[in-house]
Amino acid sequence: MTLSSLPLSYCTNVHPGRTVAEVIDGLTTYSAEVRRLLSFPMAAGLWLSASVVRELTENHAQLEQLAQTLWQHDLCCYTLNTFPFGDFHSDRVKEQVYLPDWASSERVNYTEQCASILSQLLPAGGEGSLSTVPLGGRMNWHDADFHAVCFSHLIRTAKYLHQIFETTGRRIRLGLEPEPMCEMSGTVEWTLPVFERLFAQAEALGCEAIVREYIGACFDVCHQAVEFENVTESIELFVSRGIRINKVHITNAVELLNPAENAAGCQALRDFVEPRYLHQTYARFADGRIEQRLDLTLEDIERQPPDDFMKATSWRVHFHVPIFAESLGALRTTRTDLAAALKKVATLNYAPHLEVETYTWPVMPGESASPALSLADRIAHELQSAAELLRDAAEHEAH
Image (cartoon, rainbow, N blue to C red; front, top):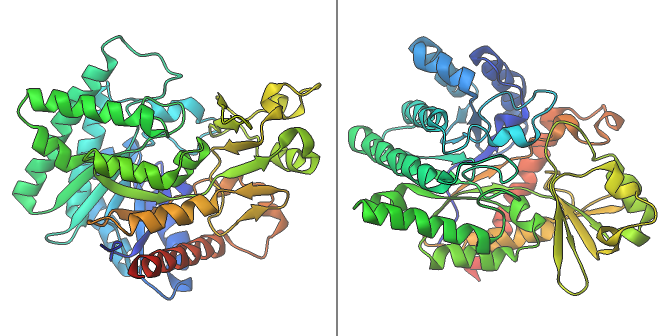
């Protein structure tokens, strides 16, 4: 029972990466500086958009250049974020981030190309991981046979990953990343049956063992906490159902307590309304009931007189905020859930890959108020905080 011994990873989707040149610029400008600020090794969890993957696939010299850049700055890479397919830094991403979904051959081809690229970045005998869309977003239109088609594509991808292992000795696993209001949401009661249907379809084709080996979950703690999941129990349920957690996103969400009576908190939350990313919002009431809204809007916060949603005891918002913060002025965060999740991960009999994924720094409220701190300073602070949480989790398990 142990946590991963690999260097802690930080996801580079915080930086624009529309071309290979932009990816390399992000590594040299930001990731290298973060590495310099840290006293411990660090991994770059690369986000490679479809346009970048196309460049790397068509021009092996560019892949060599990417590998050299990582090496020159004392960075390794063992995991890729293959969730965002297109431009993750366009003016409006929102529900488009779930497209193409797993019913699309584009998603399959992109994921397999990412796996091939990662296999060339890994050391001999290394293990890698990919995180990906939880089939698709429920707000987007789907055919009646959507799940069956998705499962067929995932089974094909599992076989492809097994083929990579057989030919290179490098084992790369895929993690479907449950997210609020998606086909696999942040609640286990919604997610586990989807996995079970995938495994049943694989069993009917005689390849259940391969699918279970290569297809599992990416457990994003922010996503689970936003839906008021008990993260410890969620992890236990994944394990009890034989669903491997291949990757853990070390992430933190925003919480507003007693919105109807918390004017300061509502005022602070207004600053988190922004047009680029989707910020699913969940409200929990005194009787345990939970309601949801697709996105955080000023209308929800400012509605007068307050509607029933405002009368909840707590709101949680899918907005990734710094993991070192227990509070943000009048707002709270779900850092307590994060600490609990990592303590539970430390009890597993295998070691999921660990990655900090705070991609919202470019739209984070209040960033201009602290010009003395660079983005590299902030990312380094997050990684140091993550390392402390992981030390606490390891010590807790040891006792």
